[in-house]
Length: 77
Length: 252
Image (tube, rainbow over all chains, first blue to last red; front, top):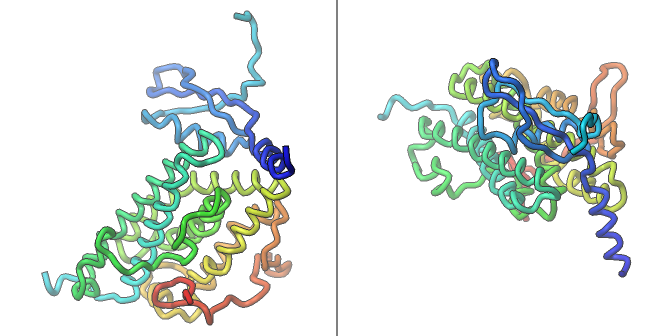
């Protein structure tokens, strides 16, 4: 592996996203929030941008992000 | 429909520049819809491409209402237009993702500064469009700030490549507002089409972008004036290489 390859790898790793955000949304106020997917971003502001642009198939009345690491497992699958 | 057209060369010129820049930004962004560093960023790039092309598509039809368009109606349609009043930076493909980030962070933010100054415009069609564009651009600004921070913090070649992209676009973007005595911008200000002169637009723009650049210690020729509590340019802009008609850097 030459220095150029190492440089490319380290640059790529430096830009790799490591944080997963679970995306929850609802279409009507009378509905509960439900999980619609997830996005990967280390920056919460970028996570918001990504969630809005990826999950734009409906006119949501609410969308929230929850960092995956904050989820506590009660019954493991 | 002779006689119903608006006769305002200054407004026609600035609208042409806004539309051409939005169109060119959209076209350059489009190349990165499947080339961004991550899938999420690629989808966001696609959404931003649609937004930019959409902004251009709401601006071009306004040109047809002007007397200045009568001599050559082909110039009001993006598909037939041969004049290109977009920045020279957008003449060529982006060299990398950092050019995308720099364009969003510097140029698109500059255009948004103009639209923000036109939200109470005496020219109703621009007033409506400006409010909508400013609203849509908030998400672009979040993307721009996030990626500038991200590339800057990565350090090494990533950071220096970002700095190079910002440097290449810096002067031309700041020039876009025109010199303080720019006849077109001054005319728009006097007529209440925008609420600021070129220097005031540039001042507002620097207050918007500098907190992010300063927090990442990215070196640009700007200093914080402690008395006025404003960011100010450290050196004059290269007006001798500025094409005031096309509102872009002179080529050649």
